[in-house]
Length: 354
Ligand code: SF4
Image 1 (cartoon, helix red, strand yellow):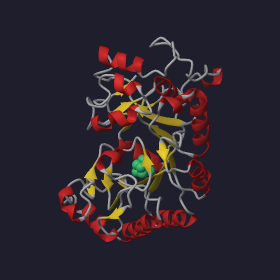
Image 2: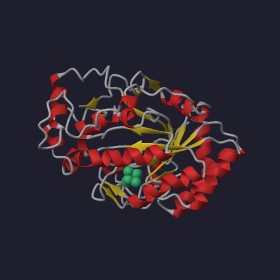
Image 3: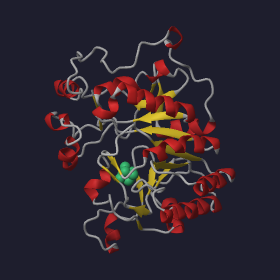
Image 4: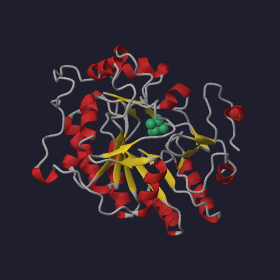
């Protein structure tokens, strides 16, 4: 059983749209007992729902949230569960207290599902201890650290030094890290920035998951303030993700720079729209201003040529059990050159623009 959004109208704020506490997303089950974020990232889908720059609101206690999950029509014991995707759970003490209670409930009821937490805020030492306490009692917890090399004008209210500091702190605590690289804007698709982000993440994370910018129709004008080409490119609101071309090329060749490190990327093909003229023009238009690079050649911002040792794709020598489970459940696929990612639920509808 899920709680329909309409049921949350008791929360007295008509300007805010509420999601079901339990919902099935393309990659995982999402559990959102707290909704609303005090931060103001310009690309966040919560902007269109009145849920940015607001105090987080609790819609369900920890126990209620687990009840709702276990009774949900979407529930399956092996499905990964992402917690708090409609807020940043690390942003405020009250949210972190809720997380601690929820993980305690999770352990008490022996819920077997792997847990995913996503954040771009500092994770305090006491929350690291809470996560490790749950892990020591058998719960798999993956922390997605959202780090994309974006500016403070794009990620408003985010302290980027705190994001950077999270990596070694979690690694030292033995908590599995997934580097979440999403989205990219032309400013963050500079070679120097992309190399800095990748080199740093690869030191600490088990892998990178890269994805593009989702452009909802209502968000187009706002996003075009940071990326004007969006407003001039047909089809961007229909794509699952939009990428600056240098970023697209870079994330599909990270193996050249870090041969043993995996980067999960959207599958470049088969992609029903990629052969259309509209998509080709979208790719070209999404190139940074001033770039004269032909559509199919290496751009000025692309990764440098591989060293001889890096020419062959890396092979996976060891796959930790938690990562193998996550890959299977997230529908990651291995391909010969890089790891690609697709979702059977959305196949035919998702397409990165080039
Ligand atoms: S921190 Fe996360 S949830 Fe909050 S506004 Fe930024 S992207 Fe959205």
